[in-house]
Length: 251
Image (cartoon, rainbow, N blue to C red; front, side, top):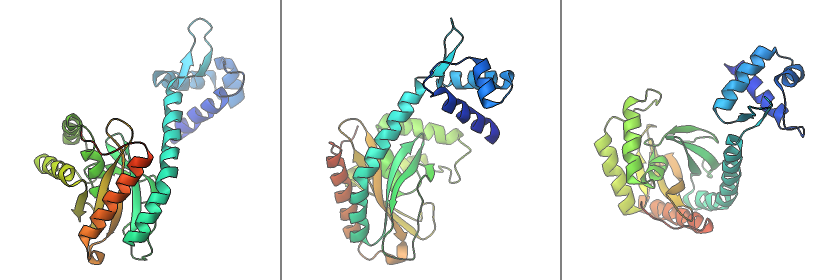
């Protein structure tokens, strides 16, 4: 599997050369693989839209799906640049690790993380992802999606076998999401990490549902003033939303 992925990526690298259109014979020669292997890889890439095949010339070129990937990557980078100073201030004020989470399918992915000053921490690293019902920051992101999406998400969780922390009580989750909307902030204790407190709030762009969420995660023993931490997280989320040209909205 890993070898096939590596070969497919090598093909995409070849296809981005200035020549732009290529035959299977050319690609086979350049990559050093049999034409049959190259054809099989190209078929898969074409099915996903990453490669386009001209039915008249039988030549291959990069496909339109890569445009949306590139756009998403660029937007993610812009969001990260805007979020970093906001997270730095939040980490300094809260004295805890601060995180920015973005949606990744039915999961939330860590796009940016800033360490707080404390050595004892409950932390997630850049690129870590887990389902949206796990932890306050991801629940805040889920709460910022349309309510129709909540039903879709719960339906997915009832058949999913990949989450290490399965959704056991959909009705309770729905009540939590409604409460997050009322409060503008999510709070969890030991939700999927024992002894950890999470506080998160959604981040909005100019239109549509929440584009991200941010918050803090720390050991429960260090939380002395939860209301102050909730206010700090709300303020940070509002600041980043304003920077993105958005404001809180519930769809």
